[in-house]
Amino acid sequence: MTLLNLCLQVMKASSDDRAALSFSLFDADGSGAMDSAEVMGMLLAGAKDSKTSFAQVHDMIRALDEDGDGTVTIDEFKVCLAPPTTATTH
Image 1 (cartoon, rainbow, N blue to C red):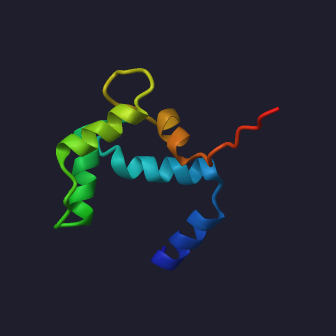
Image 2: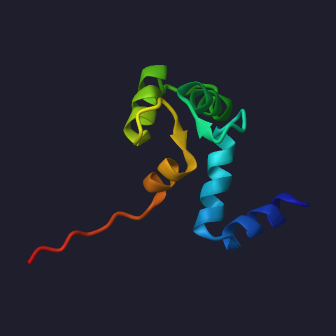
């Protein structure tokens, strides 16, 4: 499969499938949850001059971690990918 074909498949995929693919890039050990070390590893792999600190990554994980277990599951990850909702006032 070429990179172009892969890109086309991703573009045609449902939002859930795209979220799962994105999540799997960060979930390096395949545990179903990503932690600060996995996210930091992915950021460093993508940019050798990343200025993101481990503390910043830990804060991002903590912000997404709804159940407080120190990791982000696919369901918690999907929340950050969802379009913002607009509140209506009456």
